[in-house]
Image (cartoon, rainbow over all chains, first blue to last red; front, side, top):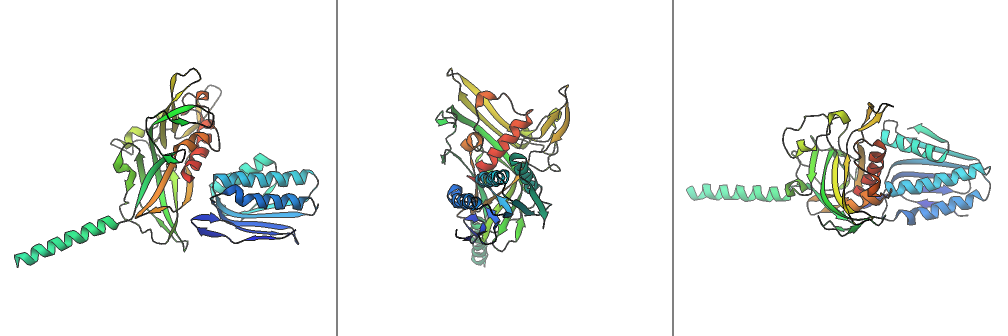
Length: 126
Length: 241
């Protein structure tokens, strides 16, 4: 498997920074997500996680997104569902969401993900 | 001497006019199914295949901020803006203290008002005061009124009003025991046309995405918090489109 690195940008749309590392099993996504074609952007990330889960190795997912639009919300939900499925199959999954705890909208969104997927998401103020 | 004074006055007038024309502002536009909205024409179909026409759309936005490429923010002071699709002057807004769109990256605003701003009787005159939200439903003002007419399965015309404001939680005796502010923040990349940042609302998205609505499932929604929450998700997407 190859690592994924996508540099973030704010050029008309908001592209998040992505670092998925096969060697240490750490996946990180940060910045803001407001894309022209959300599915096209997230499909390879979801496919990468799906492939990684076949290895049975531990996976750490660090989310540092501070804003995401409605269609990104759906893609993130797909990722969290996939991680929950891996956990139920015996995979070791850690999900951390680094956020500003004064951002109540974001806090509510993270809680919604926890409720919708049953996944444990560690909410870390930073 | 007189000629010089007249010349000076004319020069000042021209300068003022040029300055007024180049001032940056915000323009509000409406689309439906990715094209410019046509009011009062039964030409639209929801994703649930119900035919409808859009009759009215009014909304409040507040706490508008411009975010620049260097991450600096410019908060537009006293920024509560009322938009009515049928009132042309409400579709172009030059904020009192002005702002500069150069190097602007994104625009952030509140749909409706936050709880401290949403006070009954703050607007004395129409059209804003006509947006009042009944006190028994929590008071304050509608954040949005979008009224449509649709054809039901028997081809009868029915009304559906998407009215959003403060929500309520009811007890077993159907009395409100708690009120919920349904306002939320939206951040969109700057879409600049000439000297305007454009805020577009795609009306069809309000009924289609991410929640597909069947108009006949609803009567009024002003006392239905679950429905208002769902429509708020769609309205967020409608501003993002």
